[in-house]
Image (tube, rainbow, N blue to C red; front, side, top):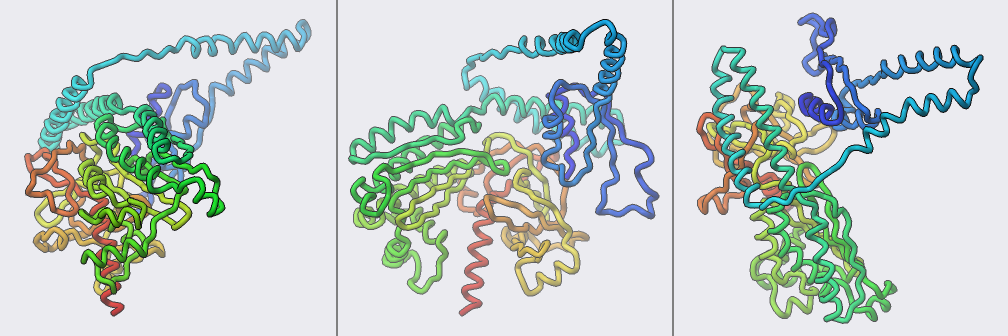
Length: 509
């Protein structure tokens, strides 16, 4: 779990690294080494004006797996100097004079901080887009060089390539950060939409924006705007009740709608929450049965019932009056969100309220991926969604003979065999692996053959041929010139969970 270069990069931003060395004598004899234990101990000499808490934040993601000790040798020397000074002057100077001298000693540090200034520069977004395209081509070219270097025995050449790769990664991150904008700037215009809509329907609604400082790719912000407008209008028009109806239910006559944004596991989560009438699940299910979408004997979870609202053509004029119009145009909303490689879910309680949750990738251009192989095909898994990798040993294999899951640390983990899902040729691999991925609150294991490691991934859109392939969101070009498909983790998780539920239902019958 130790991404040491990332830690060093962050430390270098908030201070200066004088040296970093591996401490000798910490690695035991080879016969005594435990494969599951890390024996790496590093000594970092570091200079910074930041507080210790800020330094510790660099290790936040890995603090549970390491032992961290921070000492302040410079402060110790300063304390000794101060003691000597006090002893020399205590007979001639008062305590007040000593205090004044110490305060003056600290003043230069404060002045340095005051001199820091920040400037903004307005740049045409098309220039940034062109630059991102050029960086994307640079990443692909670097992958080819890295591939060649891995087959070359020239250590100097390999070191130079590693340095260039690190620099390209920094340039990539810098360019991507430039294109990130705060969602609050875009969300602010929704206040007028809420105000106009609520006046037209005669309702009193308090609209609140939370997490406006959350950053998202400008392209994603622009494309998500229309779906959000549609959903907010639905919440005002059909979600929140009329004031007199709310009073009759014992509610405050003023309704509430909250639009919030936050980041989670490499994605941005946007929530629209109201305290309105909620959605009647029985009505939705009844309409779905009449339309032949589901069978009346089907046992659906609440989440599966709410997903029926996104079925194309599900809503009619009659449906609007029965279920508060929640299905109107929601198939279009879902399609627009999925085009951004995102997902949408609905959770609702009758007479309590409704929450619509959208999950979107932070960027559509370049991501950190993890390269794997299944059969004869290579695939990319978004790195931010990977929790861990485990070897599929004999104990797990025995469990999977009769089940499509394994027990991992006393928890049931559903397993999706990628070979079967994509129709890959079944091959005998010396080591099979399970990659645990998580999206939202759900995680599954992906069964793959080979693990190749991290890979800077330039996302290329796929044509209509792959339009209906569940579980693939794009492609990328590897250093060898091969094409690797990028897993659509939300779709794979959804497929596995629904498939497992259907299997349990059939077995129950």
